[in-house]
Length: 459
Ligand SMILES: Cc1cc2nc3c(=O)[nH]c(=O)nc-3n(C[C@H](O)[C@H](O)[C@H](O)COP(=O)(O)OP(=O)(O)OC[C@H]3O[C@@H](n4cnc5c(N)ncnc54)[C@H](O)[C@@H]3O)c2cc1C
Image 1 (tube, rainbow, N blue to C red):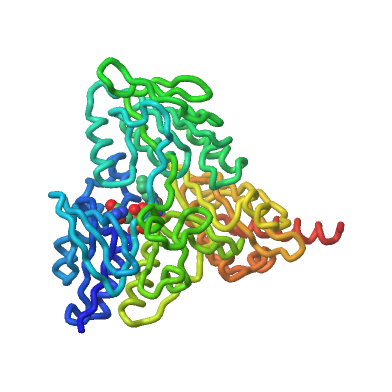
Image 2: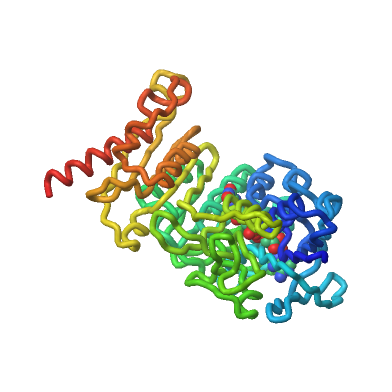
């Protein structure tokens, strides 16, 4: 008998799951229906800041596989159709299409891939015209339309996370006067404040006014009803356009209403095969779930496309009759603002403390190429190692070209459970255009290993 797989959410997780299941099981064996409330499938939200900045042309380039392409592979994609209720007891979901028609669809396998919901501070004026989120391709289009208005000169970006700094760059590249307001001590709070300060200095060097420690209180509108200023704890900043980059929370309202298990961060809880805990035939992945941090051993909500695509593939493999598991993450993320690259993996200081770990830190200054090579630029690497054992706990890097992806070496070392002493011996590549003879990651590992050893000698 043909089974039915129902997917809620048609982006990274949902359509990876659908595609992988289809690769493994034919349409005769498995009927796949994917409900997506928006207009696109398999799109790259990650590309939105670069689309707005002018690096790509928009939905055509940012859509990896259209609904038509999925349908050609026997995946029944229903765009403009929202799932409004999950009924796990009866094994069905209720949907409402663009014309308001409601119906129930039964499933043998349900994939919850509803993503995340952007945070919007509940302050007066936040829904005014000219205030934009950047979660969907429709949001990207709206920002570009907003930027087309002739009177737009000043942008306020609210939130200094990686989306905030990427959007600050996009606004700069439209020639706007940019203010970035953030309630944290320094931008990019996934980094320690001393590394965030380097990002702040880089932003300021690019001409961005950075206002830290300033939560938003109100968005003021003009006589035309459009945004005219953002009021924060640190004062009022004129704005013709406002972009929100305040982070996201797991999109789990449907799951909660259905009584499915949620964790401390409101994300769905799954086992290693991405099956929702306590259920037989419900799977979940991507931005709506919590993931195990392999370094701290705690569950976290880390909404990234890297995990979402892996989760989808794992779910599709399992529904397709195979067996795959997701071990967890080490917390790797990279970003950039103009030519300044930033990267992190593992734990930052506050996370290591929260995990009850005792640690030492090493911060080094190096360069991305040999000192004599043209266009050599500074790179700062910060490394955390466990006191006593020397186990690598985390790495943060801020620098120019070649800085961000260096963090992948540290991600591998973390996954392998290496000590900083073992890292010093890693056989990393060298030639003058790519690094100094001692790669900056190795220099940091050496300093961290020396600190661990000195600490043992002195104790
Ligand atoms: C501006 C921006 C930049 C980013 N940059 C990066 C980056 O550089 N690197 C990185 O790793 N990650 C990045 N991300 C994060 C990445 O895009 C997400 O982690 C990834 O898209 C998550 O995939 P997902 O399938 O879990 O959720 P989503 O991509 O959010 O997809 C969920 C889908 O479900 C649909 N949906 C939700 N509820 C329902 C419902 N009830 N019925 C029907 N449909 C529903 C939504 O419309 C949506 O299309 C970025 C995100 C943004 C917004």
